[in-house]
Image (cartoon, rainbow, N blue to C red; front, side, top):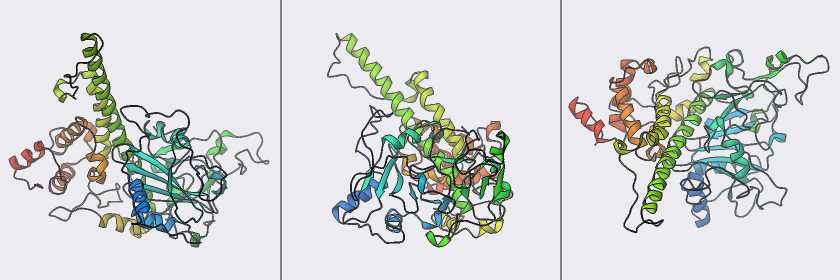
Length: 478
């Protein structure tokens, strides 16, 4: 899982055609792509992600995108989608379809909230967006950067999903962070390792090809650095003969930031935003994976039942036969395994069970993070003022080890019976019933805190949770 051949970070791979301003820039509905058939029907327009909602508001005149010379539509897009500019991170590796425009002098800027990722390239042709639909997962869009009377978000599919349905996204439409060995102009060094970054990645394998605020970033990670002894096009430098494979791993820190801070909405690349991004991208992917696997497993079971009913009636399914998903106890073991396996992965990631320790980062840069303040302020809090958005940033990312995406609409939209499975297992772990060594990182205090926070702040908890709270005289949301 730590290496992948996909080409992109959270951003979009899509073909850009040389057409006049306002013309179509995204390739759609061409060629094969996974999940287009039932039960997923990924190409369906029955979506309700944040960008799709905004497009409806633009069509009705309730919202308007504003273009400005310095930043195009970027500031307006962020405002309308409620994406904080303080989430800005900067990546200079050439890992976007607009790669010719990306260099250390002009890194790509990325912004995000809980549901939307926005990529902006200096002098680029289009703003890149990934917007998460609660049912379908990542939906990919482009917004032409040329000023027009009625700008539109164009859904981009085929070329995006070639990279964004891959091992790095767990095989579903999703997002990923990559850490690479870049040359000084952002070209990836051939043959050098590439890493998919998540919350389990050691710091020394993170942020290759990224800028990160803080004086220690380059000493504890791959940030703010490029490979020495390799030419800009990725070939060995003329002074190095023969090619030394080890040279692909020799990074040298930039002596100064090569880009102009004034070219961006914010002056730097926020380290806390990058830490959260590493968690959130794969959390989104695991939610989508569990969703897809459950729908596919139940659909296949229904198809088998329909086929059996048709055979019994001479090839026709009687009109009186209605195929429904069975309760978990009645499901075949093979069907349960199909969704319980990703649901268990989701549970463990949700609880940060294998989170890599944080040490060596610049505490002043972390404390100065404007993103961290804005992010924590959005947290829903229990009677003791605690929130799953509260940061630790010493030993680990968050003070209370349970993902804030438990409140997300996509989490709530996980189909049954997988959602009940996740909730049941979560209660087993937090109540202390499950003392497996895999959860040893969760102290009794961690478990009690997370359990209390969820009982008091998470709507829609199953009856099992409420019964546990009543039996143990714990306050819970009604």
